[in-house]
Image (cartoon, rainbow, N blue to C red; front, side):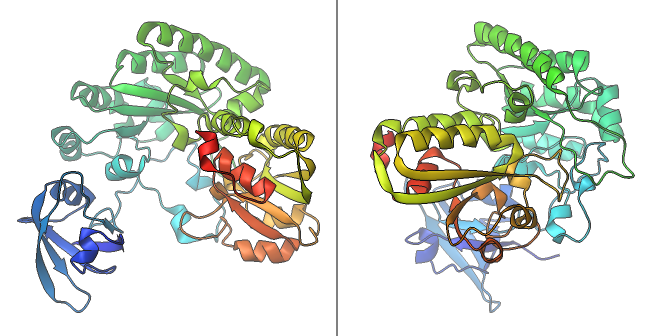
Length: 443
């Protein structure tokens, strides 16, 4: 087993750079404590004065005395969560997306992690069913907060059946212990028709809301189903009518919770509003967007950011054609925004390409799961014109789609110029117009 944590980045001008720490070095210990994981590292460097034991690439070991001023950071990032690697998931969930992946994709896409350290540091959802008593005690004793927890169902029998892990039935005890210890919790419910909706969902929402303020938010998201389910349990998606019923009930919960605690507490994924053919709620319904990283409220936030720019838009631009690439669930949103922009800015022409997901199947409608292959097959020659790709389609640290094709490959296939757009309204408007706006205009 490799010792220590490998340095992934050193920030320019930081203490770490000044101490000549380099990418590839290993941090072996902070003070007298050997490092086993990122929690040890973060707690160790939170002090203002400490000692770092560094192993250089040539094998030399350096003991460095670190002194930080108030609010000053070490400026060092590590690339691994633990010396033993990620804690893997032992669930066999009926709705597991990884189990619905085709063969032959890059190995990391098949990783099934369920690591509480990723929940703390990256906001990844964990199930608690793979958590040992020692790990649960550590979370409580070190007050590791917030935790992002995939609940799915409060009912122990239903949850065990969905996740096919006997430990899944311990949720109520585990989450109650965390709440009693003052650990903040953001909960997620992946909703399946005929399994954990209806009365099961009502019980889950009520029991979680009873734990407020420890439970800070509850996200309800629809199950994601691909076409690769030949040997898996039969599951279906929600109908429009079912989505409307869920949102009707959800609006009543939100109203009740707001009257009770001043927060709406439960939030529904954008896909539910698309399925129900309803407008996205106003910004106020999402409170402070506590589950934005989970895609909940993203559409409303995006619309609001764009609408804040209307009064700053030019009356006209030089003739400009822009192509917007998105998933089928966002077709209506982007066609509406495109038409409004073209009405306001003369010379601007926007074409929306809502790409059908043939790779995973038509039931997968979000932009983040589109592949370069599907985009290339469904777009004609763009004749050198620009097309906008949302960052969510690409690998976090590289310009690669899920099928491992690059942005450059796609440019060549469609004969166009790609522009990668971060998921915010300002970036979108700037790429559509072809020039930058003053950020102060949006404050």
